[in-house]
Length: 355
Image: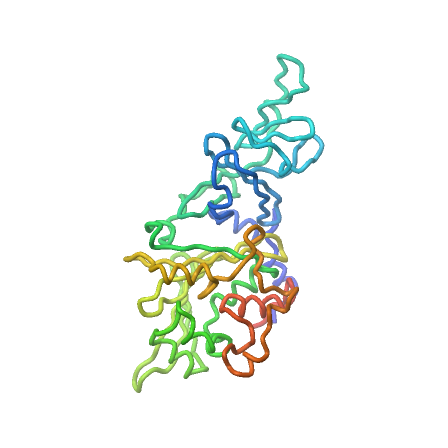
């Protein structure tokens, strides 16, 4: 078990914290592009790394990510009017562009230059692979744009979703690099889920419940190998990649798509679980894409506005004890994503890390 100070070090990501500074060294996903579908559409509240922000697309299609609150009276700009290349506060009409610069204060006398002195905190927001990415660190240390393969293949080859997870980012991410639980928690789904079934490795996961782990450092993080017995004289290796600061990619299964996650802190008690599937050399089939939209594989059914899973702690994740007893699902929870999330959330919003 980690000491309390070690646990705090790893789980706290607000401004000025060590891990908050670490996350601010990277481009991280902020929104799905579908959340800002067109110029002058409604702005969207965004909370990342404990900062309350607002995203909008202006009249010319430019993207902005700015402080949520008007500096005049502290009003949330979510209530604002997105028009004429800026977001206007409805209280007194102060207007801000995508860089956070105040461009107009209607009550100011003619010739006043005061608006030029008013600027909200802002962060760059760029679109790539159907995802809107932001960099929240020092401008002079901004890294190159993200080059993840899933975001660079043609749209026909990739699918990305996100869901709210009501616990700290670290305990969520731990599940993304833990291959041992697959033999238990997901054993009812390996041969039935359309995005997993048919892969030869499934049987090795089911037959050998005592994997041996080996970890090798990579240029951007770690390769985490789980070794299981296969045919006599052979091993089956399940290699999970972890890339700084919170990206995990799961080993592909047969000809199925490759899939992985980003675990992005909202604050210290909630995170976004981003899930992607892609195939590097072919388009996803209609059946594969339909299954992903339906919450199969590593995806989940979510509310279309809040992205909170339909199965959540308020309804006991739609627990089905009959299916649990029958072995259809090992835990009684439907879907691989929510099987993980239900147990991770059950630890508490900031669970004590164990080894």
